[in-house]
Amino acid sequence: MARSKRESSDEVPELNLLSFMNMVVILIPMLLLSVVFIQVGVINITAPKLSVGSSTEPPPEQEEEPLNLTIAINAKGFRIAARSAQLDPMEGCPQPGPTICLANPEVNVAAKFDTARAQLAKGDVEGGEKALAEGWSAYNFRELYNTLVKVKKQYPKETVVNLTADASIPYVVLVQVMDAVRYVREKDSYSDTAEFFDADAKVEANAPVALFSDPVLSVVQ
Image (cartoon, rainbow, N blue to C red):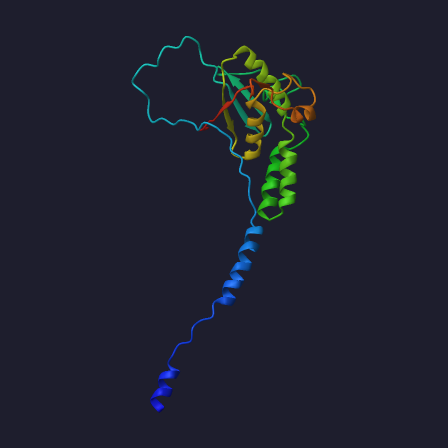
């Protein structure tokens, strides 16, 4: 009789998983509803090509010197060069200076970007984004577009533009430059900044008209 009691006490009871399954069924919809979907924007660019050493083969003969259009971005504005020569500064820019100086020269762009980095490092996202916007909005993207449209009319087959920037320039400025130079907008020239940013790309044959649609990020050494 004692043996039967010992054997009955060693039996392991079955687990009741019903309550656990009920909890899982309730949690799964809640987790799906709380998911935040992030929209990722992709900009097609061409990476710089690096070569080691010099080639012993002579360069192929070219009928015409390449345009080699380059936009260099720094805290004072945009330097535009073509055929290894910098374009003359626009009227009102200091001499010597960038081809296109800041739209608001009173803004210390470098200081704004430094402030933005410091605020973001401290976790102040609102203050960091505000300082960042005050910095990049001081650039004259409208005049950059106007200038490149004139260059495009002289070289209609050219689509490549080389982009380079100082190490302190935030990525958002590069993105704004790409947006300004990629497509022709409704007008070839703008005198109002708000009108320029609100303008859509000109469409022909169900496709936007390209300006310099092949940006290449250049390596500065």
